Length: 276
Image 1 (cartoon, rainbow, N blue to C red):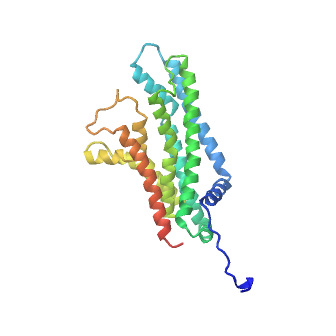
Image 2: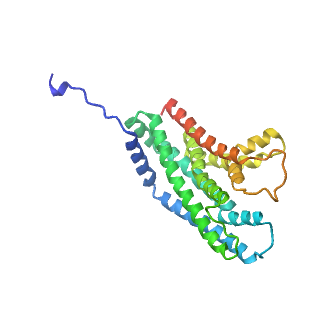
Image 3: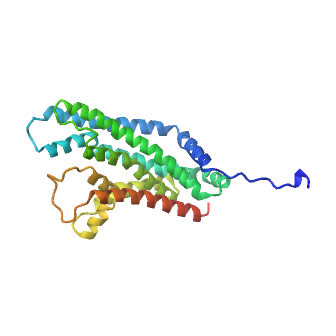
């Protein structure tokens, strides 16, 4: 048999190759480093302003120590910071896949790598790693700077405190959870603007439509990412409005894991079954 008749060997793509390719595609968008950098600075600046306000108005001896510890932690990662991470994480997650559909790059990608599940898993792994780093730098850096401001007032918290560590970990993980939700919606909708809007509706507006009045509505509310972060960020329930159906810390961690896992599974199934 001549060499001209031999079949051309098919090179199997290793998962490491897919990770490298997705990593390069992710950072090929020049706006991404700017978005992540500016969002980090915005969150830290907002928290430093809150910490400085607490520093200037705190009177030693006033207030329950647990409540003051909660105030100090809230100064390290407030609602503005959570909204910023939610918007940036969810938006990037939607765009990294919907953008490929918009440009047609997804067809080239899937033609080169027929294993669609591996492509989606590589994209999810890169997105999770980047947003976890983004969340860790933002939450960790903000925590260190704000607690340094509050230290001379005697209310600065240490990261070795289990409640403080939980607080920072919940904030750091919030961005990748939102990013995977955006990735799922981007795979389902396949249109950049529609995917971003859908992500905003699910992450921002859906929690405002549900209350804890009834058991089933409370369960639904506690099963959403933003309320889960709010529960993890509460180290004391002092001063909170009583409710018959309070959320639990374990339930909030479960909500984080369920949304991340379900988002990846749904996106993987959809990209595997759908024609491109």
